[in-house]
Image (cartoon, rainbow, N blue to C red):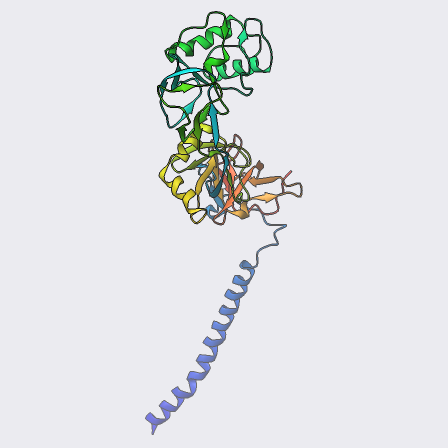
Length: 354
C-alpha cells in the first residue's frame, strides 16, 4: 500500500509544478511578443530617416545607350509619270535608255553633240550669255553647286558659271562653251534623279525635232510617311531603316531622301508591296540618330513636383534634378548627365523636388 500511496502523491504534485512552469512561460512569451510588437511598429514617415547603411534602399545607376527604337508601318507617296522632251533638231547619233536619268550626265546626242541632263527649279527657257540675270540663272547656279562645283549661289551668268558648265560638258564628251550656253544643249529634268526610265519616241539614226519625247518614267516614289505615328516618342533627330536602306526623317517621321527612296523603289520587296496593293505591310525601324545615355531606375526612386520637374535623392540625402526620358518594362529611364548621381535611394521618403 505504501508503494501505491507514493504514486498517488507524485501524481498529485505534478499539476502544481506544471502551473508554475506554465505561468513562467506565459510571462516570458508576453514579454517577447511585447518587445516584437514595439519593434514592428516603426515611427511614422515624418519622423523616420532613411539610412544609406541599408543596401536594399540603394540603387546603382548603370548607363546604357538608348535609341528609342520603334517599328512603324509606312505608306508611300508617288509623283505622276514624267515625259522628258529634248530641245535639239537633227539626227540622233547617240541614244541609250538608262534605268535612271541623272542630272549632270548624258545618254543622248544629236548631230554628234551630247545633250546634258540638268535638274533646275526653273527650266532653262533661253540661251544664256554673259551678264544675264534672272530666276533661271540662279536655278542653274544652285544646281551646279549641288553637283559639287565651287560656285556662288547668287550672281549673273558669267565666266564662273560657264566654267562650271564646261566641267560637265567635258565629262560627257562635249565641246566647251566659249561665251554662252545654248538651250538646245540641255535636257531639263524636274528631279535630280528619275528612276524607272524608258526610251521615248526617238530611234538611233532617226530624225529629232525640238520637243520630241526622249524619255518616259514610271510614277516616282517621292516620300514615305507613317500610317500612324507612335506615341510618347523621345524628342530628338531620328533615322529610319526600311528594306535595309537608311533614311533621315523629319519630326513627323516622313522621309523625302531622293537617293535613298530611289534605292528602295528598286528593291524586289517594294515591287511586291506595290503589286499587293496594301495586302502586305511596309514597315521600318525608327530610332534616335544619336543614342542617349540613360539608366533604368525603380519608379519609386523618382519624385515629381507639381511643376513637372523630376528629381532623385542621392545616398547623402541631397535632392538632384533629373530628366525622365521614358518608362519601359516597369522601370523609369532617366538621362545620365553631369551631376546625376550613380547611386540613389529607392525610397526617398519625404524629400521633394525644388
